Image (cartoon, rainbow, N blue to C red):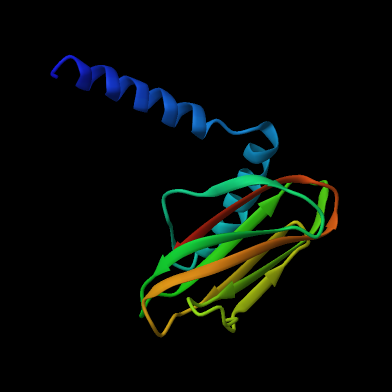
Length: 143
């Protein structure tokens, strides 16, 4: 049994590394998202570890689940490659009701901010409204 544990750990590490590989488009989109989130860090927001990245097609939406805490203020930042001309971001509570947010919209960079009154799971919808299929990255900040 002791010999299997190290082998299993190596296999798991390789699987995680393989899953974490990002395309050039996703890396470029992450740079855009980090650039936008950096503006919020100037106001005391801390960028949360981790992000979601992928490819999005026109009129398609990605739905990302996030766990939030009442009393914190959050900004959700999304960046995309140049081929994605206009993004949309919407936040929903656990019952599927849209949450009222502050917003920032610069075409391929969008953000939504709010302070939840209840802790729990929320959903952030990211959509490609105009442009071509491209890389997109989502991350969020809190204080």
